[in-house]
Length: 414
Image (cartoon, rainbow, N blue to C red; front, side, top):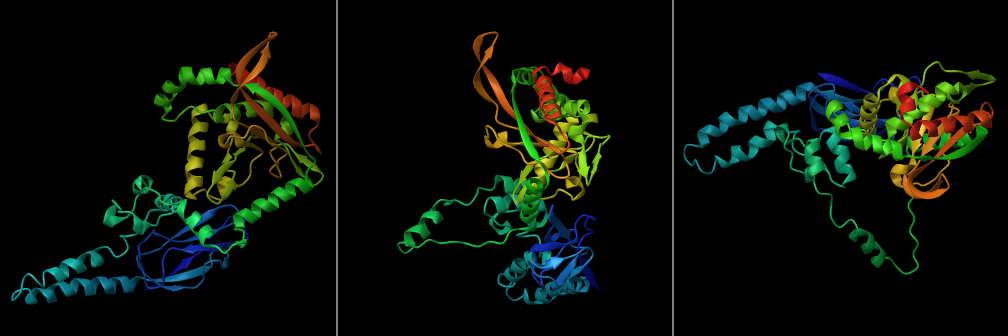
């Protein structure tokens, strides 16, 4: 029986996608729910699981081709696998009579053939999460001994696998062999995600009157609070108490106090949102993505930390959904995780403001006429000056600063 493999249903905001990589070839056996191909939209990379066990008999759309929702991209023959299994099973009795005259020789043939018939698609197959990790290490599933069912490579196998050595050696070799004076170049087409990022950044620069205001915050109160309650928090909720939940809560306080920071522009109208959905910029192997914390103001510290940790892992594995990346009324960008001291974040349209946070470093500051050392973080708030005046932007950023320097305000809604 032929089963069609179709492109998953895409979001209404996604008109087109493209095939990135087929993980199976025509004629290869596939298992139900095994990822066959990665499909890239302008927001995420989607995995397309096999709808049934069988053999991939026809690939209709090749790597790099454009596809749409529900389009048929391949066919699986479920009878082909059944026939292969039947033939393999019938081969064993046939070999049995030959075993009588020379038991040592025929016994070796079924033993060698058995693993291939038992699990044709298991060896050299990795789970989606494991495959992403292996790709980052420059490995393939065949480079790792799988401990999963039928030899399948699990996420734990991938994490324990050593990355390919000699990462630096290949760089030196081509340079040494290159003729003197040669200046190599490589042209690589942008992925849909990278093109979409470029389009939105350019849109932001062209369509908003962007301005940025800065302030500095003493992070010592937050650091001391984390030291005091961090261990207890982790035991209670099963997640580490990080800094981001404090920034999210502080941002929510500012957005409630100055709703214009949470608004957006639609033509000649200003839309005031009666909810706070904060996008958290997360790096992924395919570029920057911004999953959304829905109703962030109603979330607890533990809920925020759990959701951010989940977003980070799923972004790394390429498993964020289109819905999780759509919407948002405000964004937070954390360049500090990469060591950034100060930057100007770009607004994510149709939002009107974005908070940039940076690396916390010990710096000399003046307190009560004395120079003291404090852990300082420079904050940046970029805003659309078409609807947000400097007063609201400056006071909003100061509200964030005050909340972080006196975290009790977050509990008392002050």
